[in-house]
Amino acid sequence: MVVPVPRRFLPRLLLSATILLPFASATPAAEEKPAAEATKPAAAKDKPAAAKEKPAAAKEKPAPAKEKPAAAKEKPAAKEKPAPAKLGDFGRWIIAADFTADGGTLVTAGGESLLYRPGDVVVWKADGSRIGALSGHPTAVWAVQVSADGKLAATAGYDGLVKLWDLPARKLKADLKKHKGWVRSLAFAPDGSRLATAGEDGTVVLWNPADGKEVATIAAHEGPVTAVAFAPDGKTLASGGGDKLVKLWNPADGKEKGKLSGHEDTIWAVGYSPDGSRLVTAGADRTVRLWTASDAKLAGTLAGHKDWVTSAAFNADGSRLVSGSLDGAVKLWDVNAKKEQEGLPPADSSVWCVGFAPDGKTIFIGTHAGGRLVSTPAPKLVPEPEKPKAMPAKTEAAKKENKPAEKPKKPADKKPADKKPADKKPADKKPADKPKPADKQPPKPKAAAKPAPAAKPAAKPEKP
Image 1 (cartoon, helix red, strand yellow):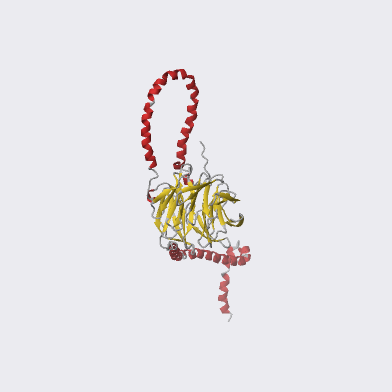
Image 2 (tube, helix red, strand yellow):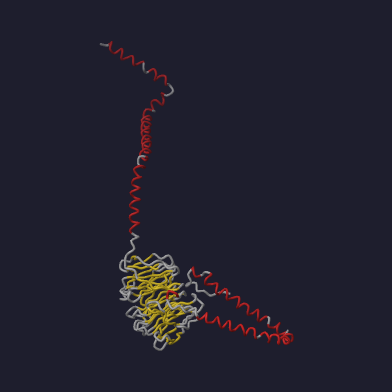
């Protein structure tokens, strides 16, 4: 059996046996059905014999009837699985999460697995105690957002079905069907008049939450659309996709307003700062990037994650960022300094969503093994970058100390090099004398005869 897994979505670690084994284990049962059907003709031929055996079969029927109560006893155990009353005891996938504007409620979305198994949407209090669930997704839920007034919640996931909920009543309001394939992200406009959904089919669909009707469909990206977010003023809609681009749209007419390029792989998160002056994006290239919203220019690149960055979000005043990655790291960043701050210990499992509570005092972290609320650390830059600067200074000093020891060796090598030219100089003088002695070299004895004139000076004193 071939399982259709979207290549652009699943990271390397998710193509493991823990995800694919459930499907592999389901295939034999499916394959056994034809075998059972193949035996039917044989059973039909043996009908006379089977007819004689019917009384015996009839006697055996009460036995399976006795087994039914045992199965009935197992059903309550199945109902107890989603029973955790505390967020800390919840061990399922949490792929997305959002707070209500007052911070009193947290809604998480995920499921038993990342793909085919039943999804779940759970509503929690700010202290992590369970309120209830929004049930109805047959597969994993990948996106959730609460409207600004807290009255609506929207969810979507692997099956491509978008659901609109009455959040206070925890009741389904509408099913929004349009996308072909999964839906990875969605966002409410600040005034709640529009809902944008981003799908595998490369489109962004705009809906009217009041009646659940489609308003417009934007052919946004050449690949799947993986992230979407409204600017705080509602006049711009940002989308990110598998084509490595971030595009800016006018939600009123669906026309493109701008384009941000720079990421080297699929974009998984897009979000505006509360004042709308900055835009944050993050993706599979392991970077978090900051952009100025006014001119759509890159303001800074924040590097440090070792795997896909799946989520990034501003705090309430826009001075800090939190990012989460499949490497399990949750990092905090100083937006103005564009540097990493001292943050939180890494999670034991891959991180799929992170976000500040509206008051900024807590951070929610969602992983494939549940989620947790942690206190926000005080802002303090990581001092590690300063230590490597001191180390090179010491190594340079050590090199300087070694250089004098090597210098005397070099002049020692140069001296013979100087002597050689000194030998060459007499060699140059000899050629000047060579023309004469060159002819006189055979008669070397004549050179010995030259001392005879030395006796002439002895004759010179006789002249006076």
